[in-house]
Length: 34
Image 1 (cartoon, rainbow, N blue to C red):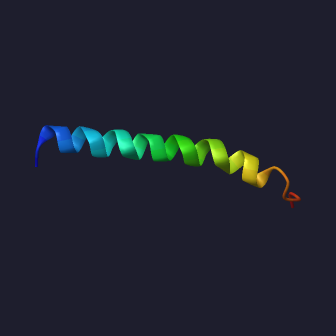
Image 2: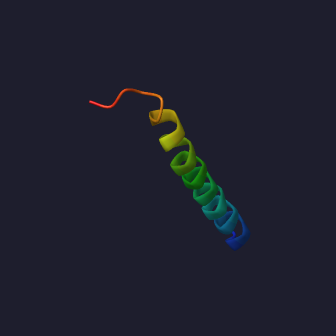
């Protein structure tokens, strides 16, 4: 594997994690909590 490919995949995973972490509270906000 090329280092560029690995770094791009890593940055993509990090951005996906950031998006999921930011969108999770906003999605769970309107839902009634048990």
